[in-house]
Amino acid sequence: MVNEIFTLAQYVESETAHRNNITEQFNPPTEVIKKLKLLHEIMVLPLIKELGAYSLFITSGYRSPKTNELVKGSKTSQHCKAEAVDISYFINGQKANLKLYETVKRLDLPYDQIIKEYGNNSNPAWIHISMSERNRRQELVIQ
Image (cartoon, rainbow, N blue to C red; front, side):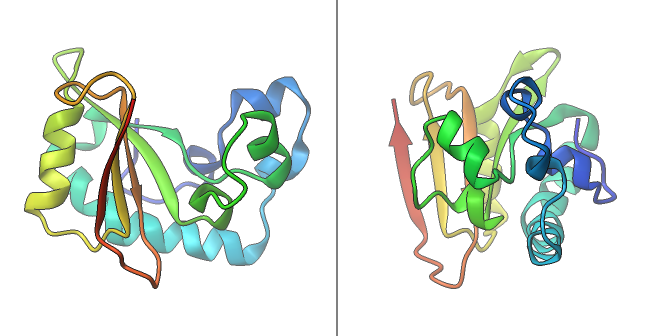
């Protein structure tokens, strides 16, 4: 679950990094921490206020280069730049990620990309939200 108050742990958690003893995943540089705090304040906090802290779960935040390589992430992944977060939303124990997607759009959050990832178009497995100076306003679906 996502807290209203920024905690680094929720943005750097990685089972892959734990299994492979990638300590750099859990001790990111100061610049990464600053960007994660900004991501939390601008993108995640409005969602917490709208949908509730106990129904949102970060499934992927920052990824160190080694972690990103192991999960077969894109070499240009915004996760490695602390510009992206993957979030799932639950209502009564059921995934409601389409509502999360629609809430990001309704709140007009300044996303660079919003992606419905896997699952299907009406019930994505999670929502990828990123922000950057490019501010492309891209809406994508990955299946």
